[in-house]
Image (tube, rainbow, N blue to C red):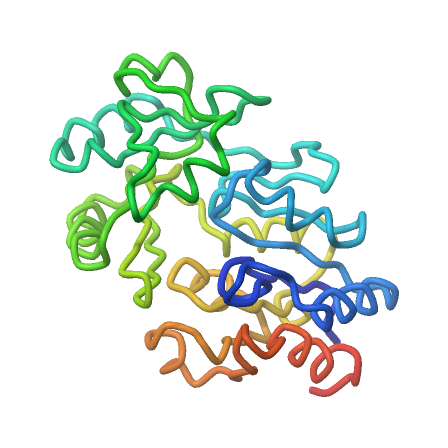
Length: 276
């Protein structure tokens, strides 16, 4: 019996226009009314996810920054694993070629959550993110920003360049954790460096254990590479029809795409109808 559902946001909960389809909202509310816990599991920060989770019931839990932070919908921190600043400094030292689009992210109340050295507000790949987060962005030399331990170091860019960077950084995984999120249709990827041992999967495991829920009673729904760890943990992994090939090839159940309320279809099938 499913007692906890973890749902990715981008490419999963949201449709291709960045909206929550009404059937997804309805299915989540009905599952929660039936006593099933729901967590959104995302690479986004709390404030960048706010416009999404505020459309959902108050009991939703938030797994943020690819598992580095877990918060309540009201913003209370349940778990927080910061990246040691000396590790962040070393990652920055080794990646000078990406400095123009590298950011260091902090768990701060408002201003200064995201620090870049420079910002091109009209950059074709990044302008939507920059404008949506303008009030949270600061600019300064990144090493000078490391007066406290950050949540993560974030790299963004074209898919091929980020794949290469991911492979290079993954060679030293253990000092930190590295995640890759790809959007091939936009030729846009993100590489995140977070504290060693952190992932959506580890955060979901910790959340489930805190509630006395075994993996066999957890369902996870995702579409991208940074969802792999939580899909591997969950007893019922669900892959979106629009997922990256690496997930579609796993042999897990494939629901409809995010353009056809695939989250609602999965919840209807495995939670609300009690299917096994």
